[in-house]
Length: 105
Image 1 (cartoon, rainbow, N blue to C red):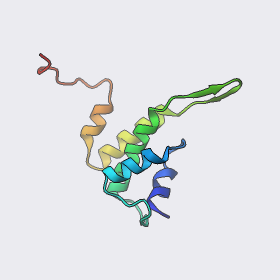
Image 2 (image 1 turned 30 degrees about the vertical axis):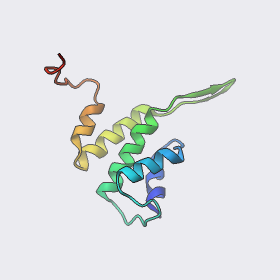
Image 3 (image 1 turned 45 degrees about the vertical axis):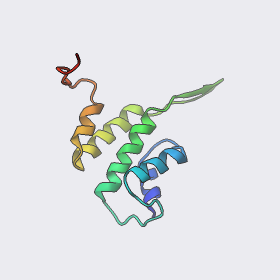
């Protein structure tokens, strides 16, 4: 299994190729590399893809309607960020967390 296949297996919606390539580049990963099991950097790349995928619009045409499981994707991304050492990214996703606004003015 390649790194790309491992990431895509965790994302329940179709992901644009350019989005996936951007995440791979940002995380310094080779998509063609072998996925050898639980990897911190692959988990973080998966979280990045889940976040981007959760921001896609629903599609509807006539009787056809496709909705993304945004809540599940966001929850999984938060879990992956926290368990793989980037809790600050998880904090940024939490709409209920109080953010420091002391430097707004």
